[in-house]
Length: 308
Ligand SMILES: [Zn+2]
Image (cartoon, rainbow, N blue to C red; front, side):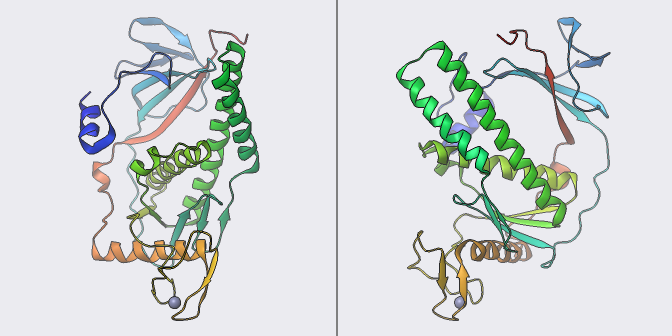
């Protein structure tokens, strides 16, 4: 509740009760979580719950969160403390830094010119989801509801898989990643489904980059959304105020450079971030303040609801 009110005073809206029907249903167990012979043992459930381990647990278990998806799959995420020393991060240099521009047409474009397209199968699944959602809003039948939940889960899983692949690749290949800060306030206002999904993808993606950067000792540099990253010429710094969203390629009136809108933006993000970092405007998060979380693991328990 304290967190909810702190968010409310920052402008996030009045706290609501957790819904019994909507959203993710979950609860956390802050202590006394044990794993014994493939069984999860939690307070008041001493006989244990059979689980499927996806990964071996290393370190001491801190807490667990049990959740159920709308399709009736039960999961438990376990937080562990491995006491592992964090390796020292390499210094931020120009040549080992990459800038990323997150877009709508393509998912991400790097300052090296690499383009990560939104996966086709995800788009396909999304449009199917949209169709079923419309059908469900007209007729709230049980069958449609189940179909909707299944489709939704499919989209979420596909998206997560894609985001993991892109974030891992970028983290592995680069020492420092520069990106724009995404404003949550603007995202909430958007009611269009495709846009809403893109927004969720962006913030999940940034979160993934941030924790993977910690795992692999890489740096993340963030710049404010206010920086005119698309409108500034990455060659001479001239700001082209007339540039509209439709223009994909433009020639700088001052230095005559031909600029690809998205690549230009990611090059600008890179140089803004490097400049800000030198001036100390956006310093890196103090690593000592980061939680000792090293991994979150998910285990799937057989659904008690069965497959029917
Ligand atoms: Zn120019």
